[in-house]
Image (cartoon, rainbow, N blue to C red; front, top):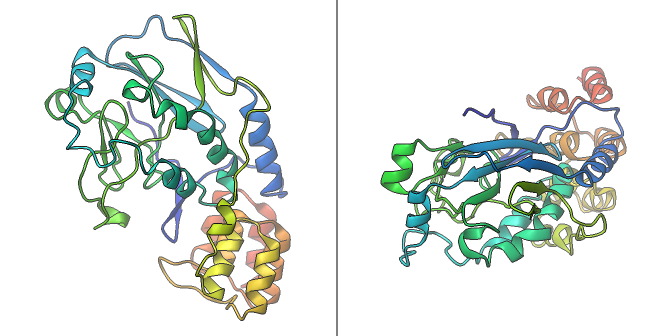
Length: 315
């Protein structure tokens, strides 16, 4: 099964493509996702076969349901976890915080806090032994995961892998030891896969989504901690990714360079195109920011017509 890569990489951070919408970004996009999060998806799993994977879309992201084979269960039952990079899920909170890459990921980061901390403590990281429910994207690159071949699953215990950075995961979505490749070359594998909120109704129906419309946790201090130890320009880029107008203004007063651009590190304007409102974008331009080689692609990617026209007029 082939699933497209659904990310846009901007200075090393993976961003998911929101649907086209009027330019009330990011508020309108967040409101839409909050509404979508209240619409659970039901899947009849009674006819699934071992080794089969079903993919559905929930809040603009792919969620996978994989029925484990007898071999998968046998391999997961082994007591030896020496091949795992994080067998006790000690990096859970840091992985969820890292998933908050921009304002566009605000809702999904909160969704990961609903059930995943509890499910991490269950056998095989799942509510039922034979079914594994997982976010279909890599916690390292944001790229769509791939399902390994049956031969690779049986011989090596690798069930999922990230084609963008070479990370491999077992049948419980736990990452195997090793070094990452691509944009993460040289880094150690650390994060297990993400698990969305879900429940079973009897044995036939899997429900992906919230049980209670009021159970979506708030993010506590994640945004503020991101600024610790940052120089003004780095702070400006980060604030622009999160539509944080007050910190954008503070960073500019501290001497941040609104015109800054470096390949691989990005610019305040590009960060704002992906993460902020028109107010932040116009403020940056008023302080000297100019389009970079990435700006038009970023604006097209998120479908922001008003930003596209503004970029053309600013060049």
